[in-house]
Image 1 (cartoon, rainbow, N blue to C red):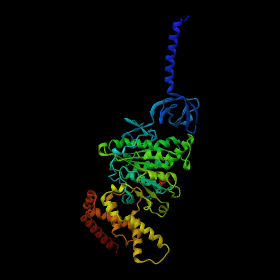
Image 2 (tube, rainbow, N blue to C red):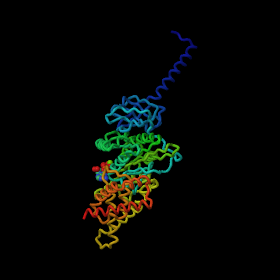
Image 3 (spheres, rainbow, N blue to C red):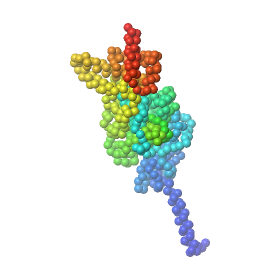
Image 4 (tube, protein in one colour):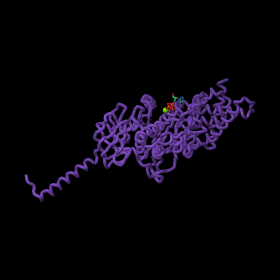
Length: 506
Ligand code: ATP
Ligand code: MG
């Protein structure tokens, strides 16, 4: 067939048209050139954005972590063994997101929002990207409502407010998780949605927590995100961010949310592994330089929104594990400086039988006292000082020197107060009961008792007040404050009971 000269140019034009089409198509296709340790290096993918979800094979996805000049690195989410060199990769044009909404309540999900509790597939109306901007200063208001933990020691001395970020820090097996779980259980009937993010824990531990929450009816308002120790580090890395997006959806609907990250030490470790595999340069303790930024941008998303934005809140309780009580290590100091205070759990106290093992001296809450109920503030005002003085004198008294009566009294009172602050797991108290118990100790009704009798005394006293003075309890619950008159009334009730108690024991 002969082609005329004037046709040649139109043929070439046609070809060029096709060529353009082919190249647009290829823009969102790439090839795996290297894969290993859950990381894939990809050549040829153009027009992708940081954090974009990539599609590898059936059920295997990836997230873009590094954008280099002519290649990019992605972490694999899913069965990494299925991906081989030479495989084709597709960009999806959207960043990694999670399903959000009330459909998640009562469920256990993985970092990508897929059900892992054996229940039916989760279908929600809405999804949110895992990385979002924190609410601006203008959209917020200061923390002004208490988040009741139901734990006497915390509600009185280290109060937490809605929208606050309070770190729970301590060695392994000192009761960190117990505090978080008890706090979740105590939200029953208080209209607070809870999210428990388990990072790098054993599946069996998470199953145990699920059982407990279920038993206490807390799963009705709770969702558990589990990125277990057996999972690849990318899934551990995104878990807290996924949790935060689920929380934000509720906060933006005007609800109060409590989110627990158990724990951020393991999160940091997984991010370190990831970063080293991505060949990012290591810094202090081999953590990448941006680990501080990572945790601060996560925790900055906890907020108390103002009325114009619905008034919702996210209270965050990150947990950090220390080694031999060393809070000056890299990750602990980072997270301490990001949060609004910390609850420090001491191994020595735990072993000495003080549970929860909260070291009152090292624990602080920087914003919560603004939100504390007035009555709690009134009864616990001198408590911290009393405990500090007691510890100082007690260590001094160890040397066996003769003590004057005044010193002995202070030590005895301190012992009683520490006894009052002990509390069993899964036993949350209403703020009224907390206030009454602390008020009893403050007014020295207990100082002539043996330490061992304090618990039973307080239990009987509570029973007594409930039986005969329920209206007074109601009054405290409603007013949340001791007027002079009310305080007098409670004092007289407490001394009535004391007389009763003494007569019974004679
Ligand atoms: P890990 O470092 O392994 O995560 P952890 O610091 O989270 O441990 P928990 O698992 O909460 O500690 O608690 C450790 C043990 O102490 C558990 O057996 C728990 O039942 C017990 N425990 C915690 N708090 C109390 C408490 N208030 N009263 C009695 N026992 C408690
Ligand atoms: Mg734990």
